Length: 443
Image (cartoon, rainbow, N blue to C red; front, side):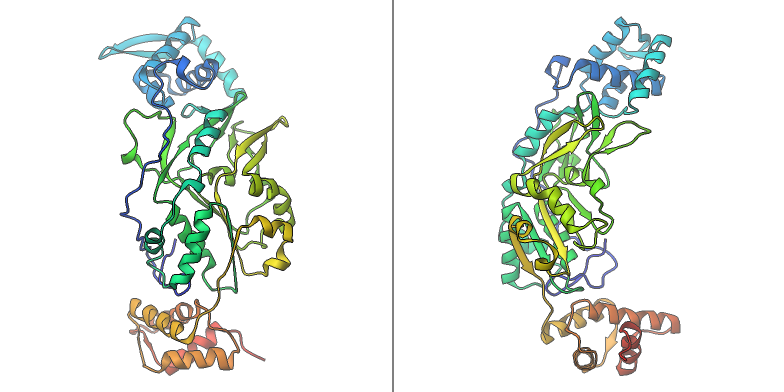
C-alpha cells in the first residue's frame, strides 16, 4: 500500500506508508465472547462435530499430547481431555505415554479408517468453529454503527492528507452513519485513498472474529490473516480462543469482483466453505473500488444487495441449496469516477445514505501539492515552475487541475534523472519533457 501527501484526498508520492494510527491505542470491544468453555456441555456446537475435528487433527499429527490437541483446536485443556476420553472409549485413539502428567495419545487403526471417511466429507482440520447463532449475536453486538467517530479521530486518520475542515466534517458525519457512502468525481482525485483512510478511522477499536463458523455440520472459514489484523496483546487470558481479537477489518474489492464472490465459496477439493468478501468485512469497511467497472453489471450488484443495504441482513447459499441468514453489518464505500445518476437507478441511490463528490483543486492547492511532492523527493525546482505547469495543463491541454498531476509529472523527472545518472532538477526543459511523456499528444 502506498500512502502519501494529498490535497482533497489523493495519494501522491511516498514509497513507504506513513501510518498516523500505527501507535494509536486499539480499544477492546465492549462485548467480548464468553470466557473459555471448560466442558463440552458449555460449547455452542455439537459434540460430534468436535470429536470428528479432533480425530482428523490426530490423524494428521500421528501422535500428540492433550495440551497440543487443546492448542490445535483452540479449546480448553479440559474440553480436549473430554474429547480424547470419548475417542478412547470408541477405540479411535489410545494413550501411548505420559509427559509431565499430560497424556500422549495416538490414533488407532480403527480411528485411522474413521478419519479417512471424515476427510472424504471435509478436509477442515483447523481451530474449532463457533455456531452460526453465536456468530450472528457477536456481529450484532459489535456493529460498526456502534463505533462513535469524533473529530479528533478523523483528524488523526487523515493527518497525512491535506483536506479542508468542511470536507473532513462530511467524512466524519458519513462514518457515524455506519451505513453506505458513495464517493464520486473525476479520476485522479483520491477517492480510493479516502475510502482506505476511512477504514483506518473505524479501525481504532477492536472486534472479535471467529476462525470458523459451523452450520449443520458444514464449516465456513471466516478469519483471514491477509485481511484481519490481530491485536493479540489486548486479548484477555480467559477468552474463548475460537475467536480472534482484530482491528475492524477493511476489504477492498475492485474490478475483479464477480457476482459469485458475493456468496459462499465452496472448494470441491477441501469440501468446506470460505466466507465471501462481505462476511469477512462484517463489523468493518467494505470498499467497492472503481464501481461500475466490475466484471458484473451495476444492476446485478443492485439486485443482490437491495435487501442487505436496507435491512442489514444477507442470505448465503450452501451447496445443497439451503439458505442461511447472516448480518450485513459494515460500512460500504462505493468509489467511482462515473456519474452516479447514470450508473445506478434511484432505488439503489436511495439506499446509499451519503454521497460525497471529490473534486479537483485550486491553483494554490496545486502549487502546495507540487511543492510538497518535490520536497519529499528532494527535487529542486525553479520558483515559476508550478505556475508554468498550471498554465500548460489548463491552457494547452484544456484539463482541470487534478491532484495526481504533481506526483505523476515529478515522477517523470525522477525517472529521467535516474536514466541520465544525475541529480533531479525540475526546470522548464525538464517540465517540457515530462509533460510530453505524460499527456497524450493533442491533434
